[in-house]
Amino acid sequence: DQQVKQNSPSLSVQEGRISILNCDYTNSMFDYFLWYKKYPAEGPTFLISISSIKDKNEDGRFTVFLNKSAKHLSLHIVPSQPGDSAVYFCAATDSWGKLQFGAGTQVVVTP
Amino acid sequence: SAVISQKPSRDICQRGTSLTIQCQVDSQVTMMFWYRQQPGQSLTLIATANQGSEATYESGFVIDKFPISRPNLTFSTLTVSNMSPEDSSIYLCSGGQTHLGRGYTFGSGTRLTVV
Image 1: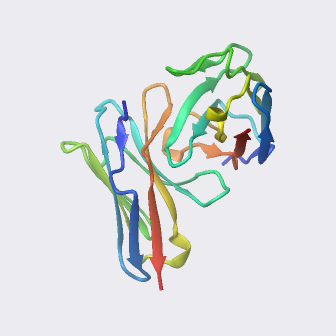
Image 2: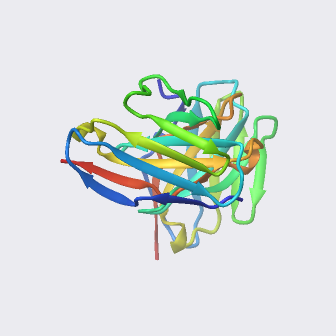
C-alpha cells in the first residue's frame, strides 16, 4: 500500500507567486521527509529535507513544513520561477534508510 | 554529494531477452538502490544492492527476474531478465551515505521499451 501520497497530480502557478505542494503519509515511524525535483529524461535531484523532530526547514526559496499530528507536509516555493517547472516528489525514509516516494506533482510556472 | 553515471540511457529490446543496466558512482557510498518508474507512476523500490552479498528485494520483486550485483562500493548492475512488454519502464539507481537528511543521488535513468 502507498504510505506516501501526493493527491494533486498537477499545479499551475504564475511566475513570482507562491507554489504550495502537499504530501500526506501514513507511517508514523518515518525518520526524514524529503522533496525531490525531476526534469524529463533526468534522475530526481534532492531539493530539501526535514527531520521528523522538526516542524520547519528553510533553504532559500524553498521551505518545508511538517505537521506530525496530521501526518502532513508541504513544500512552499517563493517566488516561483520558470525553472521550477518540473515534477516534484515527496519521499520519506524508514529505519532501514529506504526511500518511499509519492506519485509526484507536475508543477508548471507560467509567465 | 556523489555523482552517478548510469547506462544505457535507453534501449529497445525484444521480449524474452535480458538487459543489464550499469551504475558507476564517483565515490564510495554506503547505500545503493534500484528503482522502477512505470509510465505515469511513482518510483517503486526494487531492491537494496548490498556490497559483496545478495541484494535485499522488496515485496513483488524476485532475484530470478531482477538479479543485482554490487561487487564494490562504487558499482552496481541490475539485469531485467526474460523481458515482457510489462517491463517497459524507467529504471533508476540511487546511492549515498546513510545520513538521510542529505538525500540520495540518482542516476539519470534507463528508459526500457520491450517489444
